[in-house]
Structures are given as C-alpha cells and as structure tokens.
Image 1 (cartoon, rainbow, N blue to C red):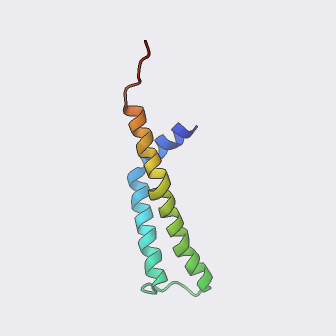
Image 2 (cartoon, one colour):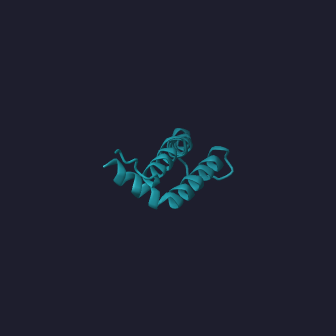
Length: 82
C-alpha cells in the first residue's frame, strides 16, 4: 500500500511541488496583506497561511525525502544471498 502511494506521489512530484509553491506564495501575500481577500475573519486568512506552512513542511520535510529514499531503495539491485 505504501509503495503504491509513493509511486503516485513520485509520478506527480512536479505538479505537487508547483502547487505547494504557489499555495505558499499566495498565502504569504495574503498574510502580508499584499493581496486583499473578500471580507472574512482574520482567523480564516491566518489559517490559509498556516495550512500552507504545514503542507509544505509535510511535503519537503517528510514525504519528498521518503520518496527519494524509497526510489533509491527500489533502484538498487537486491543483494543475492548464496
């Protein structure tokens, strides 16, 4: 099951990275008040920023390194025991 999930993320790694970067920069612009959103509570606007921080931390700090290590593990030839 984990291998299937890793393969799915691996296939869509570029799209996930682009979406995460755009989400982060958009939420930073909203948080810094460079971009005005419709009238909504500040807590919702802050939530937009902190959700992108959590998503990027999860992707860059946990999922992407796991994918890279699993990819290397799958690419390495298996040790044959005599």
